[in-house]
Length: 343
Image 1 (tube, rainbow, N blue to C red):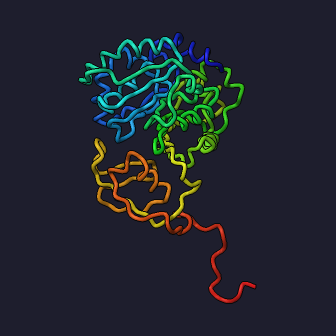
Image 2: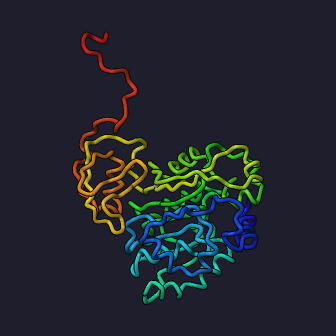
Image 3: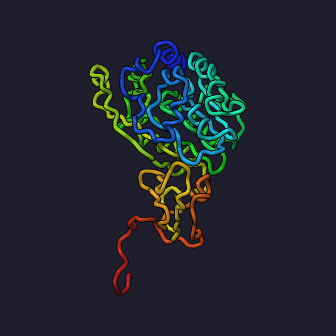
């Protein structure tokens, strides 16, 4: 599929979320209360033309500079604008004129809705694989988000490489997208409905992990996922039994991350002070931190917390002075002999 086909689908075929033929581009209803209050201030026209598959509002956003890849009608841009505060800034990039027209129409509306003296959002027309054409500066964003858009790109490795280039050290790519449990047959890429509904362009999840690591994101972390039920018999028949998941990943730009979790004897303690989080902070599906409870972590997790915007909310103990082997993993070698000589 080409950019023109995607622009046609999202600019002319779809006139609102009710025109979607599957549930792939639908966000779950269990929205956190603080985000629900922000979404209530979004202009109705912006919300009606929203086609996301997840929530791209990570924690600790105050004052952050954020880039939204495939910002569409601007719903996520404006939601994030309300969360970063007047000192933060959101940049949206999209290639579809009709979507950008909706987003730009309501810039001043949302500044007033959030009580800001001036808008804190900017929209650019462009391709998410060619962000270098927009003059965006290297190492200039705290967070990059995307909501069910990277699957539509014909050059996904380029998207990941550009995201890595634009993130500040310690920044993260936090995004939701659709993934398949196997590689989707190439012939399905030419089906405009399957592609436009975020299905035939979905990556096999293992291929995604390979691409992410090649782009520089050494330790991708799965935050949450859910099975997509499609709910369209005609489309299900075309997909030949492939199972699709909506999943949210966070990828940190931390060059010192290792390919596997390693043990250095480090520990962290969550202070419980992160806004809107409460007593438990979730880094990913495997890492939840209860306030006041010291927790043993791998070197990678230690760096993700210490060398990112999360650092002020944690206490850290330990260093990288002594390596203790794999973190929570068995050695691949035979156990040491109990006695005698090995030769």
